[in-house]
Image (cartoon, rainbow, N blue to C red; front, side, top):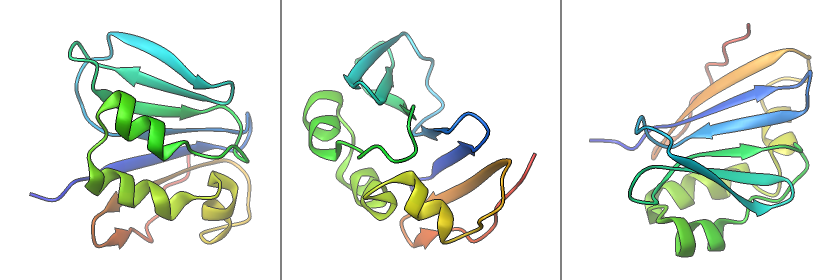
Length: 113
């Protein structure tokens, strides 16, 4: 079964959310001032909130401290150095956007709300 990671971007507020699993969020931890991680009951990352689209995603600490699997880390590497650069590859218009990410690469399908 393929790993699916969903990236939701809100250009209006300049933030993004990366969904890693459908597990229930039990608590949220600040990784950096611009990056928060939502954890489940086992302290495994459920999602990553990027509060600044130009923020660097701290993949090393996410893997080490919050049990992000290496397959997911590889996908997150494709978003680096920032969400802004990733979004630019899809569209330059405002509004919300979402993309599904699978090990084969990023979906080119962007949904706007």
